[in-house]
Image 1 (cartoon, rainbow, N blue to C red):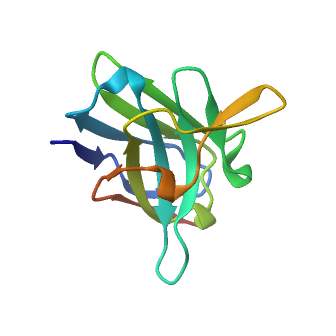
Image 2: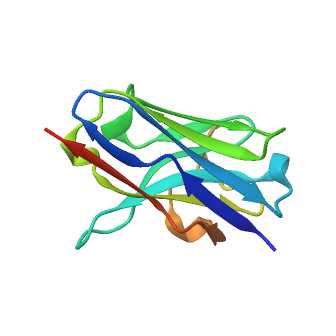
Length: 131
């Protein structure tokens, strides 16, 4: 049984940093696609960052500020968030796909940020950024 458990959320001031983690179990970790999504009340879920063994993808609003990474030995996914803004306030969800979920164009493949491509979801961790 696949289980994803997020941790590390909290309340910070604008400009500060935070790292959230997702402990995964039950996955064939090396062959998956994993991602972070976020959602605020009344808004659609948004793909933030995703990662495979060979690629990472970021939504435009976090490029240069957020970094997704994973430690296969620890079965843990991370999202390092720097220069946080109030607009980053959301519930952050870890997601995993049982396989490769990439989109290729002109020979360049990127990990998916589409929620429908992911099979497993965590319960979420709240990140609140105040101005």
